[in-house]
Image 1 (tube, helix red, strand yellow):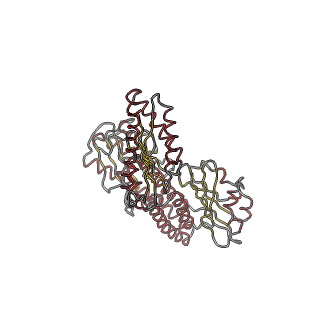
Image 2: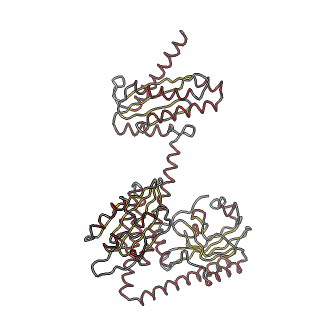
Length: 514
């Protein structure tokens, strides 16, 4: 089941969606009336007003459908928001995009879908009014026009809400309203910058650090930091701080690392943002931070990577007699939209890394495979640094397979590979080229007797998994040997291969004499 592509205006679209403050709000009769009318007019059992968030589809109103939230990759509406025109699928089973969708293959066994995009005045498609049926059917032009008219009604209601909010902001002062507009523009640029950051080839920790810096500056935080939880240990680092802050606040990350307590120590499992507009009132507030003037605090989850959870920590601090404002709604919109973007990017990168790792891993033994060997050997050649290559082959393995069976042979291969990997640890890489042939790629030039000792340990372990006799023949070569006349990887490999087969030839000759 393919996921829908991300629209090219995704960052601006998400910010426009956030402007309506509609996500995760209670049911409202005006939207329920629209979905009921859609179901009745089009004679379908299911109708919904859905919004497509960064990683989910969320329903504001629904008729005949239980889940209020779905992953974005399982959303039909994520396809609808790609175009201005309605999307109508008479039979979902016949469409490659949707045939494998859980809602089609399982309950409620959907067959028909039609959706009209909710298009904002800025031109962004933030959601849909959609109808579904459990039987295949085609909607005619009048049906689709009715669906579009109802979608326009839903959009008008959203605009009305936004206009009311706009008027409320005006009531609180024209200057504040203008400041909100400037902040919105700045936040939009920040969200774009965070989105661009996600595409850079940075380590996850650097991505989180840079994102925290961008976001902290955009919301005018006085102190911004990054808190991580990994292996049950809290670590904090200061990312940015306003000039003139108390030395206590400048050293706050070190205090957290030293185990000084505080709210952060209780947030290892935080999954939704935590905002404190009155930091001092929290029972776990750090007294020294309160004394230094911390007024408001925010902890926003940025996602996980390799067992480490990342939290953005931001403070607003009193300056003299000036009280800082608590977190504005626009601040929260930016914080949460940016955090969702970072979290989704880390998830995508984690999936990509896992896929790349599997593509380089031997399925039977778990060590690296031939593809990984070819890539790493080429990289070693390009680096121009010395390396040692060991080509090895298990003696007696074919006879073991013939007498004890392939299952026993596979067990011997796994034991040999695991032991060899444990012996070299991180000093070298172990590859299985296929069958019973293994390669060691070691940095620098290694003495031959040291390498052979590693193989002896591995083959002794492998013998514990077999009744028959198993041995190993190996050829060792390294760059810069006079016999090769150079450092070409192909020459080193050919030399190691020739030496391995020479060892096997001599061993067979000795057995024949014996």
